[in-house]
Image (cartoon, rainbow, N blue to C red; front, side, top):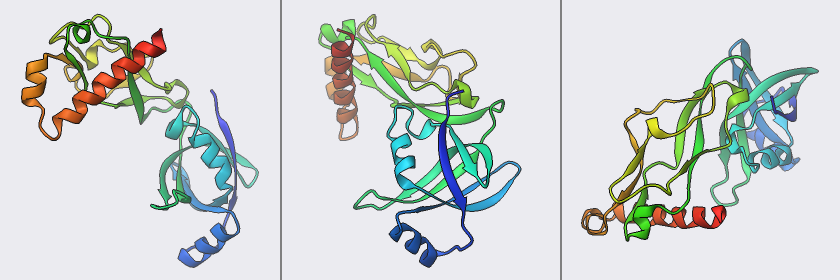
Length: 213
């Protein structure tokens, strides 16, 4: 299983004051918790964490957390960032196990140019992420769907998406993820909320075409 090493130290002090002093010293306060682990306050290097979170797996990266000479598998459960500078202020790390399932959100991408879009339709993608249940080693980077065959009014539901072995989507199998709308219906039904979704879907289809070509 692919992991990223993250060094951490146990910190004795808690509270806002000590946390501010740690950040002033270039350290990031955090906490490690989960099954079989007492909540443990930590301090770590923010740059190591930021680099990992900017990778292709984003929040789904699995860490080999080294604390006090012991290694544990962990994933980011929550992060607090400064609303202005986006600087990391605090991180929650949750213990995971290689053989135990967990739930994660994974990006959902479409690629190709739908036949219905060529005919003037609008590609509407209703979800940008999919909630999946699997083990840490099987977490995919993303779930991709080819929209090229879709004609007008045709769609892709959850049950139509090919998932890797050992991965289950927790959404309803009949839930529509992608649909090609007829232009007049798209315009008639697009209010303040509907229009951006349709435009975003159309743009994603174009991007997928360029990537595929």
